[in-house]
Amino acid sequence: MSRNLFLCIQHEVEAYESYFIQKRDNAQKWGLSSLQKITAALRMLAYGVTADFMDEYVRIGESTAMKSLKKFVKAVVDIFSKEYLRSPNNEDIARLLANGERHGFPGMLGSIDCMHWKWKNCPVAWKGQYSGHIREPTIVLEAVASFDLWIWHAFFGLPGSNNDINVLERSPIFSELEQGRAPAVNYSINGHEYTMGYYLADGIYPKWSTFVKTIPSPRGHKHKLFAKAQEANRKDVERAFGVLQARFAIVRGPARFFHSETLQDIMKACVILHNMIVEDEQDINEAVELDYEQVNDNPTIQLSRENTNTFTEFIETHQSQTYLWDDNGYRRRSLHLNNFTNNSSAACLANKIADQLKNETCKNAFNFGSTPSTKPNVPKFDKFLHKCDIKDKHAVDGIILPVCVPRLDPIVAFSNYTKSQYAKYLKNCL
Image (cartoon, helix red, strand yellow):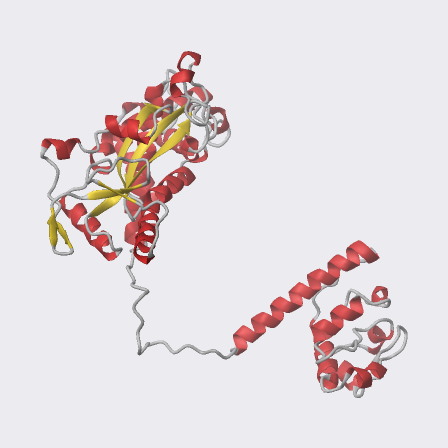
């Protein structure tokens, strides 16, 4: 949630509910501000923590945090539900239809599904009524979500023993359509005109004209293609549930309140805040619909398949770090020695030795191997030491010595020698 959106919510809630107005107590000291109370309520919604978790962060007591949460969710539902829990209007329907047609489903208004919220403190007398297939008390949320994760319909409160069909029978999702007050939905498929939109649903929903379900066990290319497209687009509501639970952990974990009315306010408030965040982020991250199936024969960007200098340097640095971590692990576990550290002089010497021997075969390069306390018999070795700013005494007792490897690479040589019998002579400075 952005800062501007938070301040907007704080301003509206403070103006609606006098409880959030900062007042003086009987000792004429200022009490808690609306920022403290609303912050405590939002943190409880976002992180799913208990009320006593707020006492140190915002200097607020447990009972005050609980009261702030209940009044905050009630105020959010009363203030914003008319705008952010509304049914789609004509402009919204036009946008949904355009997106559905782009994805191969003209007339699609979204996808529908149900989510269960576990009720930990469900009264014992109600546990049988609220326990369903998961054997624990839950409350059902029925929702309709569109491609942008906006939740257009949220019906919450039925016991968890109900399945999706039972919830649908008591849901007001088609009440406006039944009363003839729903906005017109006009589209055509294969030359046939239709005046009623539909939702993508899973297999449990009834075979109504307002639902389009997948094809179970599809056979043939046509049926498989349709099932794949339907299941891919129906995931919008599943994504919306996932984002809702990620933003507000209180609906992801078990509910700890005793009264179902409080749980309804919390769920509706979380859905409203979710839609407000979606709307607020649409301006920042404006969705750009791209048709990836269309291939441009004359692309404006020329792609290079050759390694650039920057990319090559990145790869070399990454390989060096990988070998360094590997060798340090070997030194710590097997040799009980200190870790190597990066050293530009050692890297310079290793590169120059590798360049010197890169064209040598293993048979010829073997004579260049050395033992500790002796200088490697490498041509121009003293000149390499001088160019790499290494004093001769550093090279006497364990320099980075090349090991015979095909197409000698300095990193591989360093790694192989580190794991040889002379590894303990290598110094941290190199």
